[in-house]
Length: 155
Image (tube, rainbow, N blue to C red; front, side):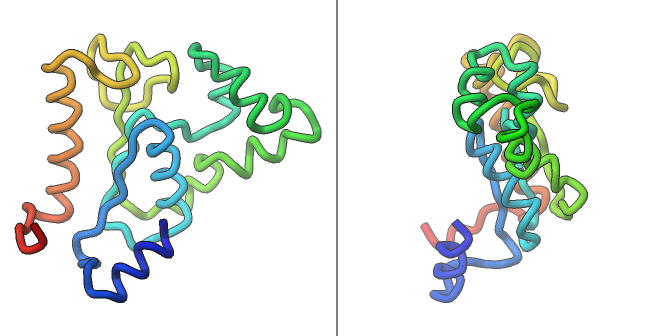
């Protein structure tokens, strides 16, 4: 992603004053990772993103225990895999984040436990049109607040 961004920037297609990182679910995880390691983003949105592998193992109710264990080669308490739970979790690098970040989650999300924005009754991705509008409006308002209104120069 970073090399692609750099390539587009070299071609004059990236406006550094209007660059944001936004992701949902695994994309939310990747957004959290990006903003903890790269510091040129004007703002970010982490929507329903896993940021702590140990938390995913312990708290998620959507089969993430097995998925996390299988992906990382064991439990957080297994000496062979314990370090992966720490080094692979964006929360480990949270102190390095300088990007203003909106974190969204539904109150009924069993895949990634709740974070900050309360969307009553929403699951991992809001399905109800009103909940989905709130979800999308929150993301849009956050990004526009940092980048300004959309420019239609590249449409």
